[in-house]
Image (cartoon, rainbow, N blue to C red):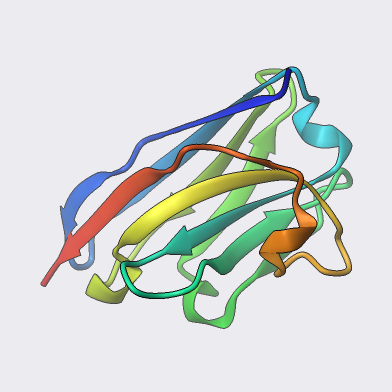
Length: 123
């Protein structure tokens, strides 16, 4: 059974940093496209970043240059390093797996999801 467990969320001030982790079990993190999504109250879930089995990465425009997605194949763990955080980055962040690289930004393309970790950025 595939399980994705996120951690690393919290509350920070604007300009601060956080690193999210997503531990995968029952699934090889490096075998397919994995991504990070976020959802703020009253909004749709939006793509943040994705990485494929070769290490190629994609980023949504609002986070380019500030966020970095990576994976540790030995630990079967996905990461999202978030720097220069802004209040508008506040959301529940979700790890997703089993996605399509071509449609990396579409939530409905991912087969597995974690429960989410909350990120709150204060001004």
